[in-house]
Image 1 (cartoon, rainbow, N blue to C red):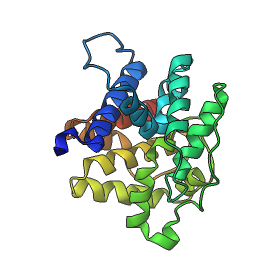
Image 2: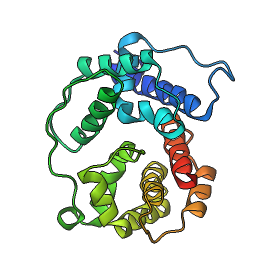
Image 3: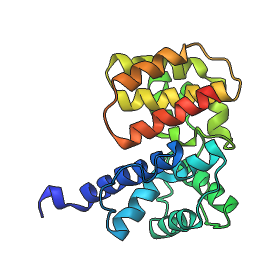
Amino acid sequence: MPFADSPQREFAAATEWAAGRTLDALTGAEGAAPSAAAPEPQALLAGVRVLGPDVFAPTLLTGVPTPPETAELAAEAFRLFPSDESGIHVWRDRATAELLSLTGYPVQAPPPPPPPDPGEDGWQRWSVRMAQLSCLALPTLDGPVHRRAREHPLALARGATRAVLRRDHRTATRLARWLAWLHHTGTPYTLELPPLLRQLKLTGDGTARSALDLTVAERLATA
């Protein structure tokens, strides 16, 4: 089978599509322009599963209730693609399960491992792992991962700066989102956020997922 037709490529495209629709819902741009055709049902569920808690970002940042069909889709995706119960991504599953429960679609998530710790991983590796969990940087979510973020703002700032210098736009944007979450919660940090967000907006990688991360960061920074 050609790589272009592989399930991995199809799921990645579906994740981008789902991220684009979530971004439209967050910015109020739904229906403003013609969108690409929706992915096949299973691919769409995979894309929604990858987005995890970000499916609920429009609700958490604007207060507009999550449409029942969106919550139902997220719950179905969770059941179709269960957690592998390994690695730090279980934390994403816990957050998704928490938000689904609030919308009346409870699902079961496995107990998460200990949260990443810069004392064990070093700040470079820890910041990368926190970037992988940037979808947890949302209002109302709080827990051990968030406590780590509040305890180590300097490591997050270092990680964001390092990612910018390495032209790793995706990691830099995700860590900027954590810094914006610190701002939103009133936690002091050591990096000027507005210039960083402006720079990332100019040097974006063009993906819907990064645009969603950046928009969430901007909303958190100005809340």
